[in-house]
Image: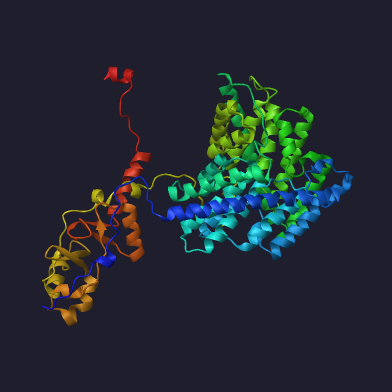
Length: 598
C-alpha cells in the first residue's frame, strides 16, 4: 500500500487562547490609534460645518461675508425671507442630482445603511458635499441642526481613512462610527452620549473591537473641543432636586412626549409619500418644501435655522406661553415638510426645540419643585421616543446642561417615551426610510446563542469511523449501502484523523481505485476540524466559509484524536435553548395563597 505523508498543520484551527470574556487580538490597538486620529479630524470637520452655517446665515439673511454668530430671527427682510429657503432648496436639489443623492436626508439612516448594507464604505463626495449642503440649507433658514450632517461627515472621514488600509468591514464600521460620534461630540460637547448613540443606533453590537475605538475617538474630540469651540455645556442650567411625587409627573410627561414623537414620525413619512406622488423630479422637492419653510419663517422667525438660542430660552422659561405655542407649531410643520422634501439637515436640534416647547406648555399643569425641569425632561423624552435611544437621550440632556439633579426625572421620562413608541410604532424615524428601500433593521441586540455554547456541549457522540486500511469498494458497501446511518464518516489511521469521506467522493474513485485502501484518497490533504473548546459560532462560520455540512471534532490540533462530530443540525441546539428562555413561560414557585390551597 502506497503511503503518503500526513500534513495537517496548514488547516488546523488556531490554538485557542482560553475561554475569555472577549474575542480580541492585537489589531484592536491599531484600530484604536486610527480612531484617535479620526477623532481629531472629525473635530476639525465640526468646526468647518459650524463655520459654514454661520457663513451662509450671514450671506442669506444679512448679505455680509462673515463667520459671526447671528440668529436668522433678527433679519429685516420682511416677506422677502420666504424666498431664501426656496433658493437654498434649489441649490440642494442641483447638488443632490449631479453631485451625490446621499446628501439628502438627515444623515443617520444613511450612516446606518452604509454600516449594515454597504460594508461601511462611503464616498469622498459625501465628506465634501454633506457639510456644504447642510450649511446652505440651514444658512438659508432650514429648520435643522448640525448633528446629522456632522455624523454623516465624520462617518465619511472615518470610512475614507479606513478604506486606505487592509481592514475588515467590521473594522471599517468601528472607524466610521468613531468619526460620526466624534463629530457629534465636537458639536455638542457630549462624549458619553455620543458613545451611547453609537451603541444604541449605529454599531449594532457591544464588543471591544468597536466600543474602544469609538470611546477613544469621542474622548479625543472632547479634549480638543475647548481648543476650537466654546468650552462647557451648551445650555448650562441647574434645577431643584426632584421630589418623590415628581415620578408620576415624569411618567405623564414621557407619555406626552412619546405621543409627540410618534406623531412627528408618522407625519414625516406621510409628507414624504405626498412628495413622492408629485409628477416632477425629486430635485425640485427641496425648493417646494422651501416655500413652506419660508412662509413659516415669515410668520414666526424664531422657528428658522438651528435655534440653539431658542432652546436656551425655552429651558430657562424666558418666553411667553403664546410665543412658545406658536414656535412649537411652526417648527413642527416646517421641519416635517422640509425633511420630507428630501433636503439636507439634522433632526436632534429640532427635536430638542419641540420637546422643550412641549415641556414649557406642560409645566403649567404638571406639579413639581421647579418649572424649569419640564422643558429639560420633555426635550430628552421626545428625543428618546423619536430615536428609540433612551440612554442616549438621558445622558445627552445631562451633557448639554450639566444638571445632575435632573438625572432621575430624565431617565424616567425618557424610558416612558421610549416605551410608548416601541409599543405603538413598528419602526422609528431612523429605520423607516431604510425599510422603504426593502431592507429590514432589527434593533434588538443580545448575545448570540452560538457564542454562549461550546462545541463540546452540542457535538454528537459516539463517532462511527472508517479505518484507513479498508478498501474503497468495501467502505462503499458497508457504510453507504441500504443501512447507511450518516452522510459522511471520518477516516482515521492509527487513531489520527485523515479526513472525511462521503458517497460522492467514493463513487468518483470507485472505478479506478476500488481495490485500494481509502487512505489513498487523502494524499496529505489537511482535514478541516473543530475543537471541543471552540464556540459554536466559530465553527458555524467555518462550515459556511468552506461549504461544509459537518466537521469532525478533535481533542486537540496536535493529536487529531477524534472525540465527536458536529453538524449543522447540532448548531440548532443553542437556538432551541434560547427559544425556551424567551418564549417558554413557567411558574417556578407558587404564590403563598395558592400554595396553601394545595
